[in-house]
Image: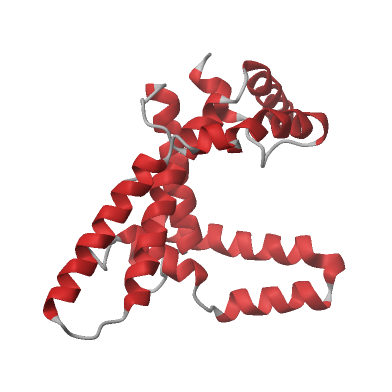
Length: 206
């Protein structure tokens, strides 16, 4: 299969293509496939147990929630995207910081959420506004470096950028021998999906 064939994915698909991809992806979440991921979970668990042992050896009370939070995010990144983060040892790990920011309370995000509840007919509009604001922040930081100290990079933009890079890298190198959710989903894509998506993109450019 061509590596480029995997450009089409479930979130971009509509109609019959979405149904076909959903049908293809269903086996990805089967018990047989998911049973291939325990080695990744064991890695994160072993790190957690080492941290717990260190804390117990000190014989002092500690906040276990912080450790389980980092363990959870480490497992998600490892099983989902095949990323071996160091967030359980490093509280300043960029994957941890941006994930926490993404789910932390945000006034602008809260306003958009409230508006989406109050005026459900314009939900797509509110979502588009939020996405456009993130894009503007990204391009300002990229092409006007002087704005970087003034404008923080959107955590969702950072995460999407990392995900895009991971997908492109996987498509370039092909089979990695590592069983994670990203690899299983990429392997389920077909050349026909890619052809249809490329054709639709060309039509939009004309």
